Image (cartoon, rainbow, N blue to C red; front, side):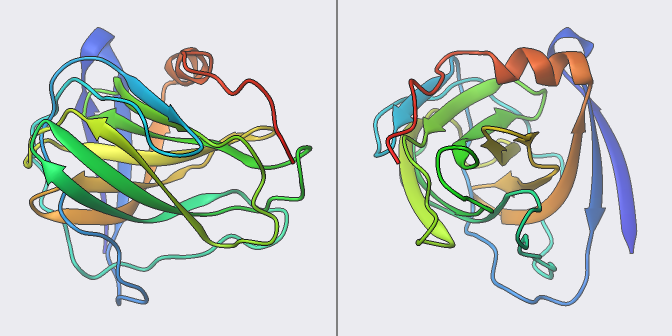
Length: 200
């Protein structure tokens, strides 16, 4: 069964969500909390904060089909787990990406509010050619347990993945497709923090 939903948020940013439920082929994630304020970040190992909130108006399904990208395809966030307290969660995000070295690698993952505001960005300072999938933690992310959020990955040469995790700390996360207005997406892609280079 396929469901499409439109959420309007800050600056009339329209997020179109295409959610697919199916047999569970992999466990997805654990619940995620609320939100409050500004974008935070961390560079290839935890250290940042998050902000702004979204309302958890969407029920998170437990049966999800998670697909893994193959060589040459886009990256995907496949799992996220949350620890800590509301308003200051640490998030461990698992990414699968077709990294080949500094010429092609996942250079960050980020958390967005329901209205498309950047809450947190975790910079990845190097490629993960020999470590797939890989998990990196970040935070704190300033959200409440019931704030609806999206977690997605960015590739240095192809941009954002269309597959994201959607949900809340309280109810869990699921894989979905996220389509953002191209102008809003372009603005997010140049928002700080940005990678300062690739070490390998």
